[in-house]
Amino acid sequence: MFGHSDFGNSDLINMLTKKTIILGVTGGIAAYKSCTLASRLKDLGAEVWVVMTDAATKLVGPQTFRTLTGNPVVTDLFSQEIANLPVPHISLAEKADLIVIAPATANIIGKIAYGIADDALTTIVMASRAKKLIAPAMNANMWRNQIVKDNVRKLNEHDFHFVGPVKGKLACGEDDMGRMSEPEEIIEKIEELLKPNADLAGKTFLITAGGTREAIDPIRFIGNRSSGKMGFALAEAAAARGAKVILISAPTSLTPPETVTMINVISAKDMYEAVMKHRHDQDVIIMAAAAADFRPKITFWQKVKKDRDGLQLELANTVDILKDLGNLKNGSKLIGFAVETENLEENAREKLQKKNLDLIVANDTAAFESDSSQVKLIDRTGNVEDLPELPKKEAAHRILDAILRL
Ligand SMILES: Cc1cc2nc3c(=O)[nH]c(=O)nc-3n(C[C@H](O)[C@H](O)[C@H](O)COP(=O)(O)O)c2cc1C
Image (cartoon, rainbow, N blue to C red; front, top):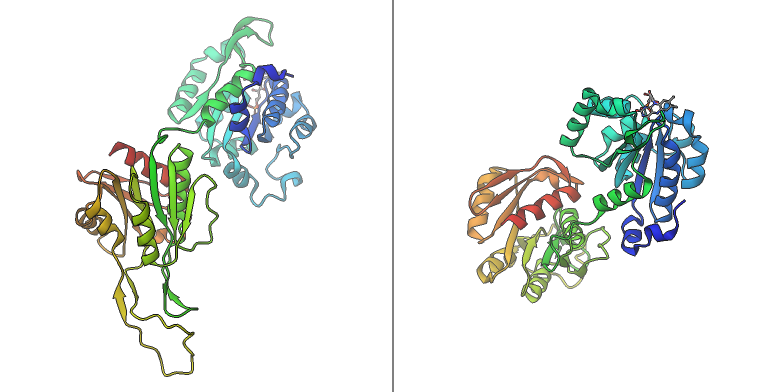
């Protein structure tokens, strides 16, 4: 075990706190060192799930990892031990912030490089979008084998990260290349990969979210299908990247991120007032909210009784928040959203020009209430970036990347 002096950095402790790390252990003799790795990750605040290959279980007992991590150890996707997880490989794959495979045999590297998913570890790796780190350990001739080299290159191209191997005493007795990096080096690499990107540090963001409610009477309103998920995801992502964020939201069922200043509003008029009050000195204003375009011309003071012969509502236009922001623009980057049922790109381009926006995010209606969305990003130079369907949290980061390029 390491003394605390090896890991005395409190930032590091914060970095790993509440992070879910899957530790894949494969059939290399260095598997015994992964017990130290699991234990240190746990001490540093991470939730650690160990997934072992069959060969690994011949070298270290799963019970050791179970005791060290306090979690079930996955050796078989069909085992009773993890039967309480809905679909074990998907649940674990989605839970993970990072997957580290240490030690990684020549065999697992080859299997992943060729898309094989024939056991718990390879299946979880294949199903996960988390960052992946591989700590190879093998005999020097294996490491120098051109096939292994090709597989490592292929994984590098697919965004797998590597730590080691290093030169040192190998299990076969030789002093050569192929020894697994020490656990502290692996932890440093994990820390580097999990370090939040601070590229928005010092920037101020005003973001709106949710669908406004336009009152008919004290009980009823005209609303829309916006869930607020995109705006909340943008606020959380911008704050995670160091920005100071004000989130102005219409009613949603979402929990606001603790890292943002939250302002709750109900109607488009409330939102207009809040936006106008806070728009000054913002580097970026993102109107992700679905502010109503129409409101009842008259709001009844008392509940409208149902024993009447129908009810005619006359609608009036609401204030156009984006248009006024575009007219008043004074140094902020202004980002709008477009949702259309037809001619999405054409209508989005028109809105970009008309409202004096710097970037427009064009969505189709399938994005409403969903956890994922497929958007097009269109800027003033006519540049169009077509993003694939992504979870909104990931799409939020890609939108922020595009804003940084403006
Ligand atoms: C004692 C022992 C130590 C081994 N150490 C390694 C190793 O360090 N690296 C490696 O690539 N294979 C090593 N092997 C061979 C792997 O265990 C073997 O290729 C196995 O099929 C790997 O399966 P896995 O990748 O599913 O764990 C070792 C085998 C034995 C018996």
